[in-house]
Length: 228
Image 1 (tube, rainbow, N blue to C red):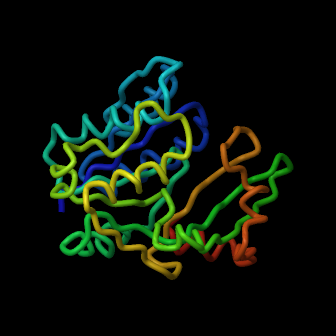
Image 2: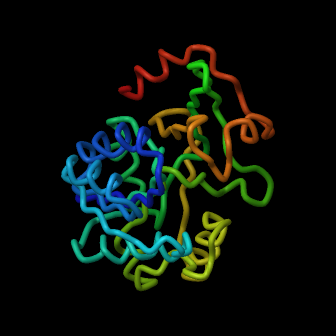
């Protein structure tokens, strides 16, 4: 099970000090694209491949760049995670078998953990997309099979886009006749960490208002189950 995780970063040093070293212990290799020497130091100290990008690179191009780098190592699959993405230790073991039948697998829902300026911890569980997007797993923790990636020449991100990348990738999957597995339920765990210190395209307070979101009261218990 040769899985390479790809992660674009931009700042959030205090978060990636937690997420990147942990991820490096969970998969065959981690490849990161970022912008600063401080990001590079954190990643390289964890034994992670780091590539410096221009500040104005579009996010779609940034994602595709590290996908192309991962291809050079001939992995069995690639794992998609944001800079705040965390998976439980059993995640890849539990999810990888789906790729025998499906082009891509992932979790429908995600835990979101946030710390406020005063140190207060908050956590929610978003169960995932509904309606026309109900078959789609959320972005963190998506696993793509190498077989499918070969079929589309590993081009799964629109380089001209700077947002709405999850949906655009689904279009590419359908165009190449890919199949999708979206796992329901909370386990194995995938979580996103956020903090008042850093801007986020989908901030905690906005996500907390989504339909079906559940407030998590037993925060420390969930963190312990995930391994944090």
